[in-house]
Length: 188
Image (cartoon, rainbow, N blue to C red):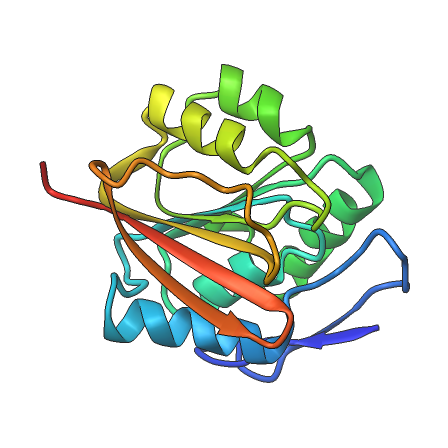
């Protein structure tokens, strides 16, 4: 499977991955919708941004953020083969100095690691029931910067996600079978 970076300084760069039923990269149309929404309504990626890509898979979301000017991208993926591939692509694109690849499961990283970001992208397997646990841990460990943004990608028919509306401004967008939820930390 070929994946292409859609915008920024790396626009058009391609990465190749073996097809796998476990791998579901964020479609280009969804990526464009996410970054367009960030640019127009929420919080643009800029030279101060640290983008955390949880459940990285191919790493395409973190690569898009780097291409669009993020200072740093942190990739969290438990599959060692995919971690190696993300690292190879970062090297090929000369982005290793602006990135970190953590090859472990997401929840232990959130529980035990001191990472911090302005944008946190969360795209677990669509059958995951961990959305609320992930959000609780991000809040508890203060992983999101002040005024930061959390972006969830999930199946459009997911109804089991609950958020604290006193902590976040909520935006939602659908693209085909995909629902994108933006939670922007409010200034309280």
